Image (cartoon, rainbow over all chains, first blue to last red; front, side):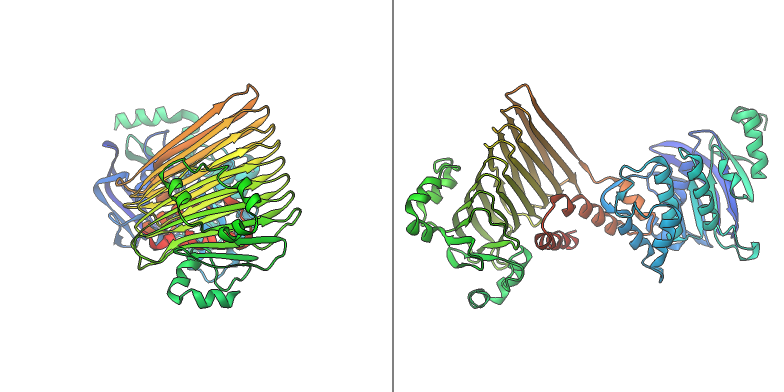
Length: 248
Length: 370
């Protein structure tokens, strides 16, 4: 049984159609990369899977672990095992990263996880600060992956983990995402799946993806080996993909 | 002392008093003053350096001294409310801290209405002698079995050179109670006044606009308020600070949430001397469309070398923040309550631990308000 199945999904944002008939299946333990030019709706697809009402589902279904979650609130989806690393998360005054971490970690029996993962992501000094308030680009990304590690979701939606991040931080993030997606485990033991949006492709230097997909004009137009698709984009740019789409 | 309070204060009223930080057991308190309707209990103090008397007793004991201080910072003919205090039999407290004495434990007071439609008229005077320091926690409340009433409190505060006073008020009134504090503060050289106002239960109307005169050089005045206005409540509150001393500093910070009530957050800074610094900050959050928040900041400069600023923001609770928390597995209600509690962060007040604990307890009660 696939962990995630998206069937003919149509999404509108403030009355404007964004996604037009997406079909996508993610298997257990699978990591896939989502490519596409800016503003095509990659993040919107994540928002819709996570369940944010601003991203209106006009048609289609989202099935998670065999259950139709199309109309469930985000908090239920998170509890079922979907997690998201935001590209630009809000900062929240008066709520400490530590406070939120404790809430996320409260259903796990091990309290040391906060200590362990915060050190892994060099965030132990940030725990007592308000969430994302005054965090640098790299700190925001590390905090997002840190929260996902605590959540340990079956499906991680990771939106541009390396944008605005320096080299040293990318290496920390790469290793942490590898851990999050069970990349160190044997294939048969791998449970956690992930969808990663990347522009720079740098994250591919740290982990192997099973599949790559191209999102253009609200449709998934092409799929294949993630590294090959990325090399193609680097060589030809997205324009070639759009031309290819027209021919189809 | 505790025995006296326990004898006079009925069990059913004690819990309510504890909600506003007044502890009948007097744990961690240096002195207590209680006013039940117009009946004064105590006042007594465990420290010789802190004089605490009822204002009536102080008038008998120090007639000349009192004449020098009373009705100077708040004028008796200011409005109908101050006038009614002029005409009433004087009740309230007189606090004087001896020069150089720095009290560690807070002084607590409670103004409590326990009779329907009672009109409580209070006159308080605080004199902080040179180099002294004190934390006061004022709990104001009405009994659960009271619906309507009036509380008028005139308070005059003198802070002499190098002295420090932090003055925290926690209010918990019934729905139909009218609350009209009238406060004037005088701050001398290098002295500091800090006011914290916390109210989350609402009342028919709470209207307060203290005036703080920063007369001394390098004096400072800070006014913080945390407010939650439930449906059918009105808060018209703020502070006016007149910066007359060279290098004096003022800060007025207001955080208010409307859960359906009306909030008018005022602030007025008047800069008259060289090198003064003053900042006004007002943030408001609306949880629904039944209520309203109006921010009225006023900055007035009379000297070219002043540094004055203000920031005001009013808006609904950020949906983006709610969904962010929901994506971590937190329910919508819990997410809202976390954001609201964070918005009314008690850490911004910089309170001494004993008072911080009480204020936090009050804010935690918000969880049951949605």
